[in-house]
Length: 230
Image (cartoon, rainbow, N blue to C red):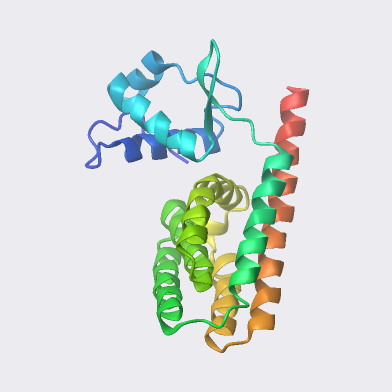
């Protein structure tokens, strides 16, 4: 994937653009786990001010892709299998519980809207809109719980999910042929929710999340093994 070397000319010259660019560098491996984010060289590389870079880094902290260390400053986080396990156990608990609720018409409408947006994103065959729409659909599914606190909590952990979803999409090239790995799976889940088949929906959501988890675990383990060899 080509990464922009100068983002100062992009229309959205905001902290979000900076954080998105840094995230792509991390996902692509240009910025490696444990690597310090050196402000002067990165700002020059991206064609932005150091203040803009700092704002982008602060946004990345929310997704746990970047962390601050004493005497080193901001560094690229090193995701662990324990982190992945904790995140996916949390996802599984919330989403499997959500689809067992009797859905309100408003919640179903939100899922329908999110699903239509996912279909549009799939047509683009571009990673970022697909990942964004994928996570938004799962956010709408959690909305079945009717809890603002749980929805807000899921929104927070979804920032971590962006990294893992993007890694999976690039590694397996799901974006190039997204109908089977993405659209077909979510179509089954959404249809079960629409028809009130709560047990089926729970089984489908569980299968989908656990399949994602298993594949991501393989990918992360390969990265860990590669770092140890290197």
